[in-house]
Image (cartoon, rainbow, N blue to C red):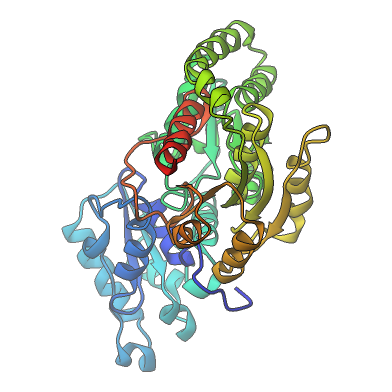
Length: 423
């Protein structure tokens, strides 16, 4: 990160890596960093992610070298070696991954050398995740890169297997439900799915016939590397919400695998609209067509604005995009949010909460989709808010999803509930 961000809407690289590692069955993180760094990074990522707990090997249970002044001065490689040996002895796991904090990388400890000396065991890998390398998204991408570089090998292709990448656990507060919903849609049309976190073999990532990047930019570099190394084609399709977006997604996947998805789409569309019709009288009679603003990552900015404008008739004000999108991907996101014959939102790439709050006040919308820290602004300008973006500390989230056909119904329920509570 090249500048100071006030009240950032993401954790550091280590936080993103830890939330992802602990979501993968059988993965055990080993932090090489200072005392307290791991706990702060882990809970700073997961607790504001809908109050997700530590689970099996998270929080204070994460093995850590806890390097002090002595290691900073003389090097922490011996301490790391000791920690790895004790972790292997005491903690059962399918694979162990050393992740670095800021201290270890600043003093230049040779992690690869330690792993080479300690064992030839291929179940131990490492990823560079010092907080100063970037945000939670960086930690996720660096972890994916480590898996591709150090775990995967050439395997026979499974003609029905797809990988889902691009959703960062806890950073997308609804990650578990969203992945499960998209997996269900793909299962329904006859495909098998590996999401990294659904208990499938990690090694099978290289046997997939397609990588689906559920983000406009997170995971794209990993998908490119998987294509170059294992000849796996990829599709970039931001997380779909609602009938139109999900239909397009299913049609795209059906076309790739030469699956006739027409009957499936017709059935799901009818089922979804039947549910939405139940609330149509309320929407019309109460004239629920608010001017809204989104302060979310690029994934939700695209999905929410498309769904709310094209399917519900809401009026977009601005899309504040908070995930530090690299310049190379910004034009494609702008294109996604250009609705041509319908009102389109003003697009603002901004991660600084102070500037976001000022923009929210200036726009004074009728409804806000943001995070828990935006609630004070919503109260100040007297409008309802649905917290949908990290950090979320006013809702407990376990497996709720806003993705796909069914997620759209939940989104309508939650948004209209906030609206009626505000009457």
